[in-house]
Amino acid sequence: MADALSALASVYDAGPVGVTRATPGVTLQERPARNLVQLSGWPENFDTICDRIAALLGIRVPVDCLTVTTHDDLSIFRVGPMRLWFVSDTNSTRLSEFLGTLEAKDGVVTEINHSRTVLRIRGPEARTVLNRGLPIDLENGAFPEHVFVQSVIHHIPVLVHRLASPDDTVFDVYVPREYARSFWEWLINAAEPLGGQVLEVC
Amino acid sequence: MLRIACPYCGERDYIEFLYAGDAAREMPALSDTDIDRWTDFVFFRDDPKGEHAEYWQHQHGCRQWLKVIRDTVTHRVISVTPAIEAGLQADEDKVEVA
Ligand SMILES: [Zn+2]
Image (cartoon, rainbow over all chains, first blue to last red; front, top):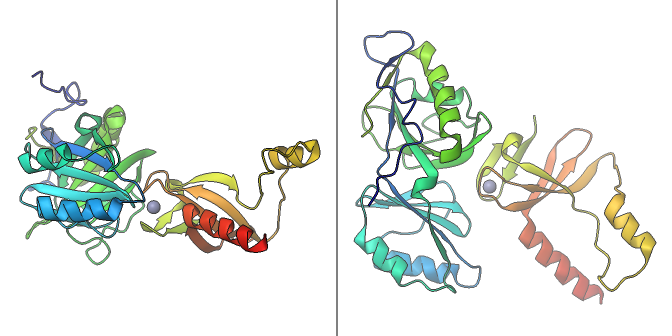
């Protein structure tokens, strides 16, 4: 199968960004190899579908549009009251099996992994960098681990997910592919005064 | 600064939302042929001072349509209801009147 080309391929430059610090204030890294599938349900039977997900995938569907539930490397984001994102690093056989059981009356399944560019933003200044454009409180109490928001940065719709990490602050930011270049430019500008490091694509 | 408490996502900045018009007006029945009622519905809006019902879409969040009661003087948001619930409630109210 042909490999997907990164939207940032022509501008992505691993190396230091802006001011030099002993350790970078923030590291930036593209994460291309994600599987992302959206399921949009119907009001009549969405609860039943959620029960089936719990039974077949072993993951409880989040009750709100804020918490991410995860089992192994498969996570569920409830991006709308009746809209779910399934995200995993690898091809999940359990997920494909489950999606295979769905009929039109159960919901609409759309593969959207090529529609998003995923960036990992990590480090002591990660919050400061994001908050240069993101109107969301990212402090621990308001935005703990396993929480996500959909909001807007630099007029670009983004989904920001805080991952669990015992010793630093880590966010994955999902950006629509068509705005990835523009977002990247914004991100580099925001990171420059704080001292950043662009890591090799993982 | 206008802040809107989305019933699904929580309180958010207005830049995440799309203003989508007056929620107080009522569409005439499709069988209604009265030109004045249609003209009024399509072209004319009240400009109230104080509470105003309006539709907003949480465009960059959960993408749901919301019915917001906002004070046009202070910008205070008085209530936010999912539009789908507000619509069902309005339908029920209509049945009761009939
Ligand atoms: Zn919302």
